[in-house]
Length: 228
Image (cartoon, rainbow, N blue to C red):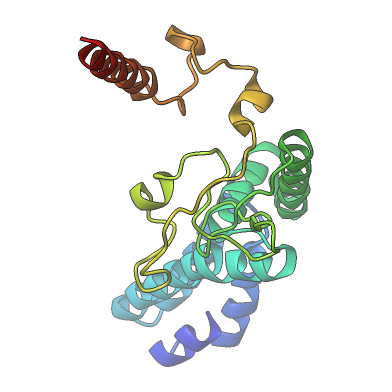
């Protein structure tokens, strides 16, 4: 804000920058109050200065909320900017300034609890993709090498259908043979792969049973031909 006020020639650049920073701690109304006061002071000198003052305050506040704050929180607690921004909005709406202060640490704690619960219940590590909204522990094969092509819910096609990994990051990422482990979705939810309706496992492949029937039919038919 100070740089912007200085560039447009605001006569109270330093004072308005400090006031804007203090009022930024007040959720919802704080930024609007600081912008209004700075704009009124600018209008006393010229309407054009008032207009540019309003633009500077809006840009400074949006950059702080949507760029700087999420990046600082991400580097401190390893939380993705989308998650930290969502936590800040929810915390501010529920508890005001106190909610904004505890939102990011609480979000990081809940993320850690989820990762711990998932890995202990399923016996598998939660996959972490570069750029993923939720970052966990990368899955490793029997030799200890990280396998980026695995996803956490047992669906090898997920890596191709999502945009979590760009072509420039992993241009030749391919799903490798999966270890003989139960589908973690079933352990977490208790759903059965052969269930129907609302309780149907969304990761169960409907074509599996049909393909098995077709295979058995083909084998039986060939055996009948041989016997004849």
